Amino acid sequence: MKTTLRKITKIPLDFEVKSGEMIFKGYLEYHSGKLILLKAKLSGFLEKSCDICAEDFRMSVDEEIEFFLSDGIYDGSNNIDLDVVESLDGSVDIEELLASEIELIKSDYARCKACQN
Image (cartoon, rainbow, N blue to C red; front, top):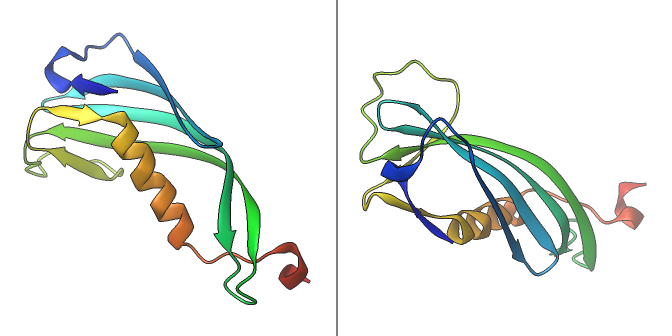
């Protein structure tokens, strides 16, 4: 799902995309200047290798995601506490953001149930 950032207004634009057993559901909303707020929930299950025993296990995911998208290079003039993802072509691909969030979760340290004890 690709969206043009200039078309996003103060009225939230809802989205929902899926990848395997993962669901990325939320909205995009104009914030100020070139900034668009993305607020979403990422939930479902991922296959991951345990960082202790290297066995594959099914990991439950339930994450709140919140960051800004910048229509162009972010100049840092706004004092904000959230991360900013820059879009150089004036659009955002929600499925690409989902894939990036999944890879971030996969890169985190995780243990299977057997190794948690």
